[in-house]
Length: 400
View 1: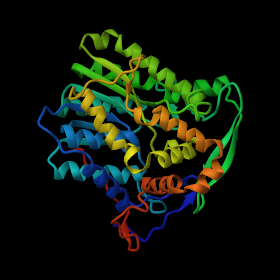
View 2: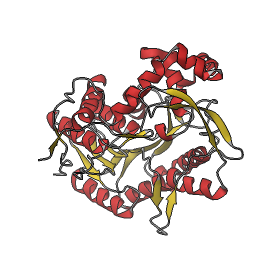
View 3: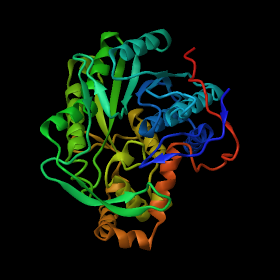
View 4: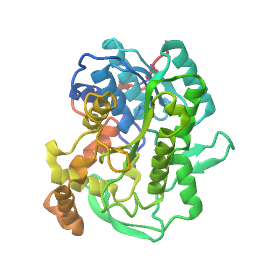
């Protein structure tokens, strides 16, 4: 037992401790927001990066709406006594509780998904409990990756390419959000290659090949990797920067996998899925994305800004054939039409042109953003008693 009274500790845009009950509450709230399952098959799914962001939403929506069976993989830190476990650790424990309560069959593995050992371990579990995989959803986000073939450690960077980037940003490190300015020097070719090595499609392809080598691709197998395009407002630092280079590699990987003999043999498919903007632990680290997302929320309000869970429901309905695939000219599944609507983007650009005035005129989007950031770590969540000690040493769900 490790009952402790804890308070949020913020360093810059990061909160370094998490509240287990608050993190669990966010999962249950997401669960309740997903429409209940209708009749249908229970596909086998492998979700890589299940503990946060779109990966978490994919697991929750898949369980609640389609009764998926299978495995989620994440890499989360436990409680150390000095620092709480990561929020993803607590979210995983809460998801496992829902799995048990609702009679589902889904397991959670805590391991470095970039490693060959992880692929072997997960394949063993699939062979033992589930058999071939119907859907592999790739939603990993990490600052570094060790190449399993060479042992080289690659570090991703967030930089523009070709020219320096200077733009407004949202400072949410204090109690009141404020507009600041950021400047980033252009990344080098080596930094771009390293970012591609971490966030591109190499690891995704390794997972597909590993499953295929073990006979674990089901007939009609589908794999989908989450990506983002975003607005022209943030394009210099995102889509046209080092991260964008990685996303382009991810999309080329999808085309290569889709045309590969491995997938053709199984009548399989590979897609990238362009999701809409979201407040995630990964996105908060990207300069200007916080301010852009705040303004987007100001424009769209409560009903127009689609949550990760709502988008995950759309994705599963398309993957399972409940609704037609929404594909663009490059063959990507699009979930971001609500964000990139021309009228919406025009209103965002108007706010972006004078960001301090826009923030002074309406703080609703920025206040919402800050609350969402704190909720990522389990803070400022409704129906949670923050004033009392809480058990922080929560066990990872058993695999049995």
